Image (cartoon, rainbow, N blue to C red):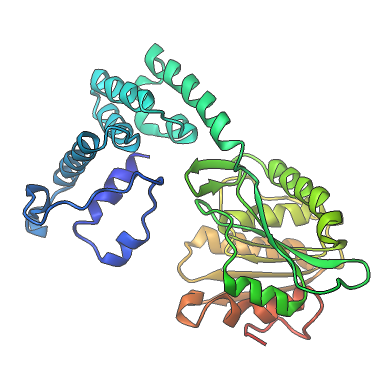
Length: 351
């Protein structure tokens, strides 16, 4: 997570849009500094070096740590920066303070390369074990937790067709009023799940190692909600973005008996992509964007080719995101209806 410090620093020299996209754990957002605070003073960009930015970030975190005695994130980031700079004793001291305040960000501590210099120390290992216990106690209530919306009225014979949505990395399950309207008009039940690994408050991911836990979370949810919401188990469709879309593509390839079709948007992530597909007679749409790098675009095309042999596959390449054209409803309403067999083609559009 040492890159997090760099991101904090970029707030001082980049646009407000970048700042709006930054994600902090609940209650850990940086405080607004007084306008005359020396921390607000900026050097000319020409002499504003990376070392200056790192130093300013540490000053910011020191301020946060002093002003909020419960802040877990600030001493954690100071520990990461100190460890990266080889100041192992100082790193352990800050890490102990973060643990004393209740550190539970297990995956951040486990996977941050900044801590490589102290990973063999008794202090680090002890704190990692404590953090894992707190994580398990806290995160188990939220990992894989579903939110859902069902149309009003009587379900069709066999039950409601069902959309399962897998979010992108670092997101959480959320259903907006626009989502509810979209899926109610389509006559389908809609289920979003939190990812199976919790990173921070309202921030989840799917496993970086395998799609198995994702499949298990979906099936547990469906087993519970199918009789409760009168869902149709033969009409379950996957929709997914980013890391969720990579998991969704693997699920369609390996467990096609559970899913009737898929809309996969900008797949990316670390799990190994499926090498073979058992899917047959499915409708699958895959979308990717100019903003994705070459490997991510190639991944989308890989899955389009993987599924193409025995299924109906559509692929769309977009130069811009949905926000520029009015959102999800403007672009993916008709493609989603096509996946469900309710539209004659998958052309992007609202109707």
